[in-house]
Length: 408
Image 1 (tube, rainbow, N blue to C red):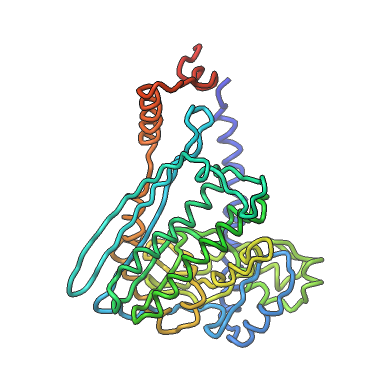
Image 2 (image 1 turned 180 degrees about the horizontal axis):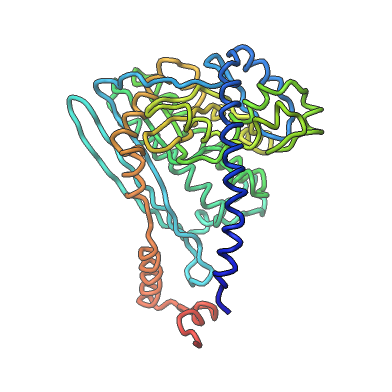
């Protein structure tokens, strides 16, 4: 039976009156919250967010730049480069006779100034051998973890950072470089998975740390490297949590008892509840401007299993790209160098301007990396064709056959 749109429309119309009233109240609460938050001094914000404790909502820590502000970008350097690497993959297919996966890394290198240039690359890598399909401990024990699903996504992220380091190291030694990755380096795929320690050691300690160290070293050689991870339309609430902590005078124990992530029994806290970071900076930031620099309050970003990696990726700010508010994570060596932080902001703002609201170098890298649905089907056909030509069996699973020959 089809959906009864008559009944559905009546219910939606009934709901509209309540939504309109709620929206008006929310707008007023938001305006009041913003006015009160802007009055908090940097010292007050730093003290209140540092001592926020374990509250039922995440609280970002503030620094010398304060709780809320709109910081304009300086002019970009006369000569500079923007580099980005993105990735896509084809996962192991249990319906395909050949056990394999493919990682495609795409990149873009844009040069601005006296000698403008543009370079692209697309580099597919097929994994079929035992050594590529499984991670194994170095101690010779029999443990092994298949690389597929979320773990394959984590491996791809590591390879993106490694390839980015390759590209940056080939840049001219005196030209400032904006090195951009799409998304975050909090490495959630590994943190959420129940993996053996050797998996995290191999991917994080042995490879990710090594790639980050190379990028940091590249920045020490005359060439400033402003490394950043860019997240479009974030849904985070850490700065909104910092605003609540700054406005609420209760301690963490009382807050845990009387507050939740989106509401509170305490009037001063409840009035500031229910907002997200993007709302705050939609109202505050002009195009190209950024927020103050923050340190994340998300404990998981310090990585699982006592690994120290993650602290160097715990700083972030928000930027108005011209069409949206984006979250930008930066490593410690960028966050602790005011000149490099400002240069990175200037180059990023220009990238967003040139890309009509999105960094053009990330967009172009994605175009080189993307594996379309048609590509995936052609990949499958190619694998089966080559197996047949080499006299290898190509049985398909019953589930795959049923999809190709539906009964009705």
